[in-house]
Length: 261
Image (cartoon, rainbow, N blue to C red):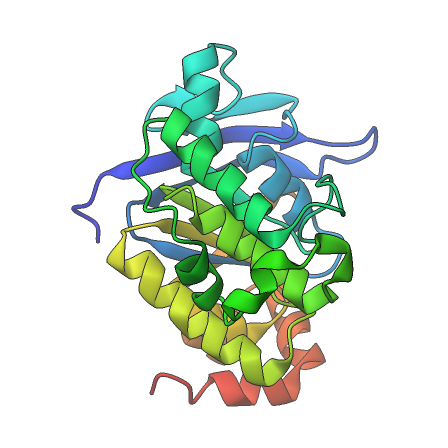
């Protein structure tokens, strides 16, 4: 992986809301096909970081680039390309989309967005749905009729429909039934590997991070304070916040120590 070029990078990010900085000179990078987790206690700024990385919020200082181009570039052709190639999936799924819109329209709009940005797409609604465990009969459903878990799954399908280079996931499967969550995570990881999609996954779910990522960063006090394979970090945490996570989730930690063994 180290020989693969960096496709996505953040450098010197600083952000806050008037008090101590939420992000403080934070830098990270993703290579094509790399899958990295983001772990941290509640309120440390994981969602803020994802918002800035996705171009949905601006840092006080620093910049984020996709293939060397700022994700907040004002050039129209760059904006179109970034919108298709850099996708974010939030915990609340489809906020901002007309709840009366059908599932099929939601996906076909994403396919159109991809084509306008010069991305190849097969416009396969059924395939997009099956990739997140939803049968084709959901195509005619409106967003307002979907459960929270179904909306999260559609949000992932919508993000993947543009054939992105980078996928940012912020607690993406919290509302999905645990028995289905594992299957979706497995299919998502396989899809990302096949298409060399770089992923950043912010989550409290250790099992999900274990399934989706190769390594994790621990965020604390605005900085990445610890990085490495999830099992190694859980086995021998070096930072107080990481130790607090281990102590708060003993059963999950115990399970993750033997996963992928």
